[in-house]
Amino acid sequence: MKVVVDFDVCASNAVCMGIAPQVFEVRDDGYLYVLDEHPGPELADVVRTAVTNCPTGAISLEDE
Image (cartoon, rainbow, N blue to C red; front, side, top):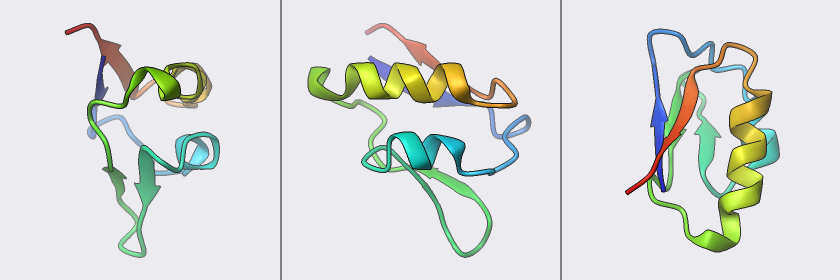
């Protein structure tokens, strides 16, 4: 699985970071960073939860 963020849509509101801080981080500069584009299967459920809860729909997953 690969995490994909549409940064043109992302509002950097940190909802995803609150759900999956191992994968997402909003830094002091106000921008979202993906810490792990290819999270392991142990994070699959939490990453899917972050995707579904993104208020702007900016996060998606791709199968690899």
